[in-house]
Image (tube, rainbow, N blue to C red):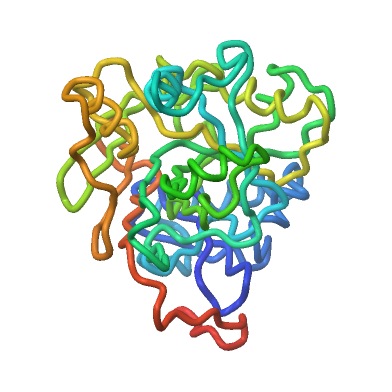
Length: 341
């Protein structure tokens, strides 16, 4: 089944079922109002949602309406934990190249990972609001999973059993702030603003054979200002699969239902497939030409991130965002926000 969260003026929105072809939707009212409630009681609520999903896909849902990605918050608007990884060796090799950031110790035996802000995510069509273009604004297109409870000390196989949903992610990075934070040694903070997710999140069974042993074997498409810059294969070169990423987190902690784990920028050794973040493009230019020629994103730039199934249909819907200046932005209280039409 496919799920989304509609804006309704509250912090956590309203849960909706979305049809397989992303054309229609149906409120999950009567089963659950928010996705977190479903994740907390998955075995009881998921079968009920599946019945409604089946009715929606067969055209028998009585109160279906046209699905509008513009009305979507992140599928899980806030979570207890959000962690992003660098799961692709080719990405790490480019970003941590000689003369730039030092290569992390043990990068081939354990995944690189950071814990980001999870108290408020961006919807797929929400603008990325920032105070300055000088931050070095970069998109990072990747895949993410939402998990059930996963116990402390879980093995990768056990962690895989805890995956409930998958979605796409734009893990925005501010590269010029990142270098200074890494130099200080404690971790990333200001260089990782709010993260955005695809309008729709899907259960693994919707992916069929494309979901295999913790890797999603589909092509991730990235278009910057309308120009396609990335057609990266998400599955074959994922060095650490999602079970391994989650088990790495579980070495010292439990994961609670609703925790989100991201893959980091999808990356391929075949450079003809393009890139899922500008930092890789700049690294390649530096290696080939001695200097980076491609600039980071500017105000008014747009990024579109999408993944299509083997039938050519969009799986998660598209992340479509504009980079916008912070001026005049207001953080509204939930009861002040305009409810979805």
